[in-house]
Amino acid sequence: MSASGVPLAYQGSASAPEWLNKGDNAWQLTAATLVGLQSFPGLVVLYGGVVKKKWAVNSAFMALYAFAAVWICWVTWAYNMSFGDKLIPIWGKARPTLNQGFLIAQGDLPATGHYHADGSPETAAVEPFYPMATVVYFQCVFAAITLILVAGSLLGRMSFLAWMLFVPLWLTFSYTIGAFSVWGGGFLFQWGVIDYCGGYVIHLSAGFAGFTAAYWVGPRAQKDRERFPPNNILFTLTGAGLLWMGWAGFNGGGPYAANTVASMSVVNTNICAAMSLIVWTCLDVIFFGKPSVIGAVQGMITGLVCITPGAGVVQGWAALVMGVLAGSIPWYTMMILHKRSRFLKRVDDTLGVIHTHGVAGLLGGLLTGLLADPTLCNLFLPVTNSKGAFYGGVGGAQFGKQLAGALFVIGWNVAVTSIICVAINAVVPLRMPEDKLEVGDDAVHGEEAYALWGDGELYDNTKHGADETEHGARAAVAPVTTPPN
Image 1 (cartoon, rainbow, N blue to C red):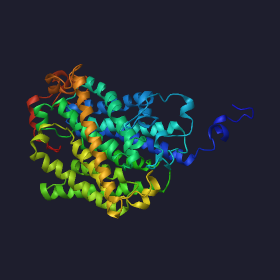
Image 2 (spheres, one colour):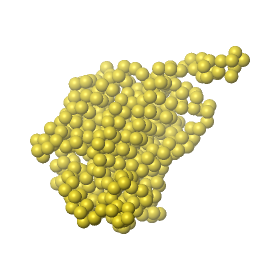
Image 3 (tube, helix red, strand yellow):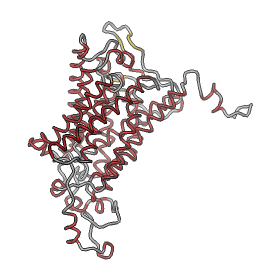
Image 4 (tube, rainbow, N blue to C red):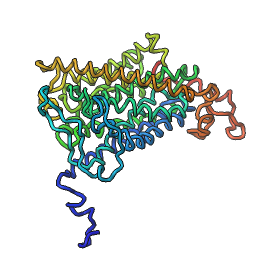
């Protein structure tokens, strides 16, 4: 409290320094919260509803644990490894972000200054007009949702203890590498690879890391692979709605300011997601005779993922084109190619994350290399005169950069995820034992998603009061709506 009796928090010189833009700060905090809601409760609810009933609690809990664990790792060491001072071209220097002097200072991404080949400065380092605390918050929820997306490949069989170890290890040795290399001022950032808001750093990484981890963890129980119906499609739709609406913060927060680029990216995001959902649904009707709600959700997700690397740098018509391709190419890889490929069928990627995030993220990055508009690029990117191949000139080189950047992200994630899984398996088994796989939540957590007896619970006549054979007959008629494995 000051001598005048007015709290310091309301005095401009104390809590609102000259560099603070309150509009930018308010929007960035809102955008970060929207992304956080995508994870919790968004993906927590989606995972809990889209899996077989006996895995609802375990699946939701894997997402919840990851969200909490990433927060602690992020503020303790991982933020500065991703966005701090450069240690090596792919990694920042690890240090905590817990000091108030650091958190209330103006935002600064020190390694993001861009230089010409002769060493002269081209673009100054990113310095948003709000505190570092806002930057740390915004980037933390991006890191958290990446781990939760990885979990989608591992639902229904990964040991929870192994998952508890996997989260901090993968965040430290995989996510921070991609984030610094592409966003934080690393070699891909300096080279001019375009990833507007996470097509590579988040979705491509999660898709290939999840698929790799699924290979090492091993498959679900055979009867779960054969029959894995969602236990609550309405919950799935609720989570999907939080994902779609939350993407306004996901892509709208990309330019670190409440500006025209943010507005453009939000509109493009919705165009691409809507078109992708419609195309996916139409393909389901044409080839399978029925529109699938789960399929529509998958189409929505592929559209959101595909637009993410280019949301702020492509025109509206390009977002429409990207939506058509996002609803058809991942549909083909999931619904057709997956069934024909012996290797893809061997790896049990529970929710098909390799398709919805890996393929869609790669597709979006490459399409950005083709369709990035030069005018929009100059509003956002550190490399001046960037543009997609569609616009001629140096655009062809941009497509090559996008391809090379994707190959680096894929290669790093496959290698490091493999090393992490092998290391964890040397300490604790990656996969649950067969007796727990048979029962599910009741055996793993001692908790049930619903107060009803069903597949995966230990039958207790005094508690359930139902005939097992009769229930089994009823359950057998439930439709299978999950992706092929």
